[in-house]
Image 1 (cartoon, rainbow, N blue to C red):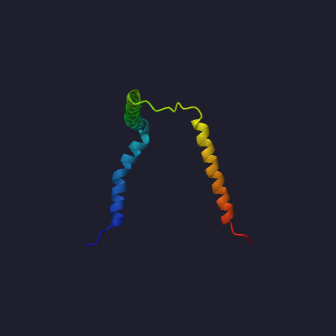
Image 2 (cartoon, rainbow, N blue to C red; image 1 turned 120 degrees about the horizontal axis):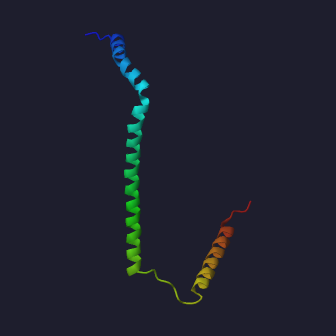
Image 3 (cartoon, rainbow, N blue to C red; image 1 turned 30 degrees about the vertical axis):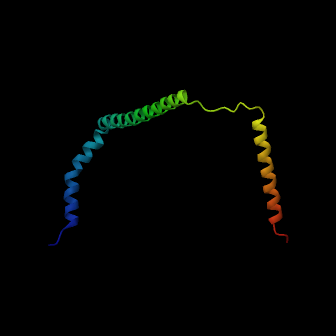
Length: 103
């Protein structure tokens, strides 16, 4: 069986030409429902995200009301931690200088 693709293409284009002309002439009337559908899709997705965010915030407030974060009340603890970190950093730099090969 030999299929005439060119003849099928010509036949389809002859049958579809009135549809293309109608779409070209009435595109404004087609744009209104398409725009409405896109806006509805966006609104539904956006509403879902906002509700999810609101639920997450409410859950976080609920958790914090029962389990507030611990705050260190000892004076000087932040300074002690800073000094410890600086000592570690200095030791790391000294070790790196020792391991550096000399040319």
